[in-house]
Every structure is written in structure tokens, then in C-alpha cells.
Image (cartoon, rainbow, N blue to C red; front, top):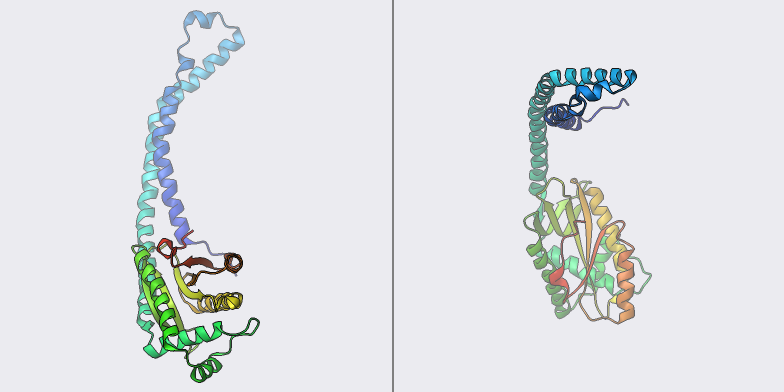
Length: 303
């Protein structure tokens, strides 16, 4: 395949070159006209010089005189060349940016058109499956979706427990509502069509970028409690795998953000284990470990 230069980058190069020539049109002539030392020598000093030095100095005076004479013309040529490049490059750059903006807007409109809120049943099943997985002994893999739904039907979670975790999730989502603007638009508890027909991506939250340079953020919220922290390694590994699957299917430029909410006060060893496990994922995902006390300080992972 033949190399095809990026026209957008080439246009930026043209504009940059034009700006450089405009600046040079003022700087170069001023440096030439300011260097007058060679012209200020007196006749007496000139007569006292050796023949070689006198000849060399006269040659330099001739060059300085010639450069000073043509400096205004050089400035005009540089200025004209720079303005010409800018005149050619700016409209091209504007058209390219308008095309890129239109493409990004069309992509965003398509995404928003495919996005739907999760049903109450989907929210409930997602929470139930999450809690049941937390109760599994360490070392057991999470079941496939069909098995998970079957197990959920057999072992329903008691209402107070479910309400507690649902409330905790709401606390995290409310914090995201506070920190998302103005750079992001938050969509919480939504579902998207996956890469394959019939596949649904059930997202805890999705931060859609309003800034071209920033990627979208796919958010996964997980919890750790007194009776659930033993399996936190498995839970974080599952969250990592789930986020990576989501990112592979998501169409726009995006990063994954795992928010681990320690809803209970844990022992120091258990807490350190969780933080260390989270640190292992930072090369792949953005990871934040928060408690009820530190949740108000949660910020967007933009670095």
C-alpha cells in the first residue's frame, strides 16, 4: 500500500510556514539594518589597518551596504510569500475542520439515536447479577449471562441489600453529574447495540466528550463491602474484562474508567490489597478507589 500523506497535517504545515515567513519578514530585515558596526569605522582607523585588514573590512562594508539596500525588498518578498501561504492554507483548514465536525456530529447523532435507557427489569437484573457474583467463593469464574439470569431467579437478593447497593450506585452517578460539565455529557444506565446484531452493552454510565481532543469515557461501577471484599480481585478482573469488551465494541474514541466504591469501612490489610490490585490496572484502564468520605473529591480521569 502506498503511503498517503495526511492532507490535514499538510494544510497545517502550509499555514505554519506562512506564519513563519510573516514573522521573518519583520525580524530578518531588522537584524540586517541594525548591524552597522562595520560601517562606523573612521577614516583614521581605516588608514591605520594593514592592507589585508583594510581590504577585508571594505569587502564587509560592501556586503553590509548591499544587504541594507535590499533588506526592504527581502521583507516585502517574505511578507508576500507568508500571506500567500496563509491565504491558501486557512480556507483549506477551515473546510477540513468543517468536514471533521460534520463527521463527528453525524457519528454522535447515530450514537444518541441508538442509545436507550435501561428498563427497570434490566437495572434490577444487572444489580442482582453483580451482587450474586460478589458472593461467590474466590477463584470461581463468573457464569455466562444465561446461567447468571437463571441463578438470579433461583437466589433472589433480599430487598434491603439490593436497595443499599442501588443507593450507593446513585451516589456515584450523582457525583458524575456534578463533575461531567462542561467537557462531558453524562448518560447513566443506558444500553447500546454492540458490534454484533442483538448484542447489548449495558453501561453503568457513559461520558460523551464535548471537546474534540478528549475521548469518551465508558464507566463501570463496582463495590466492596465487609462481606464482599474477599472476592474483590475477581470482581476487578471481571470489571477489567467487561470494560475492554465494551471499548472494543464502542465506535467512538474512548477509555474505560473503573470506579471501585468501598461502601464499608474495611480492615487496613484488606483496603491495601484493594488499592494495590487497582494500581495493577492503571496501565489499561482509568481506576478510582473511593469511599463514602472521599466520593465528593472524585474527579474526571483526564490525565
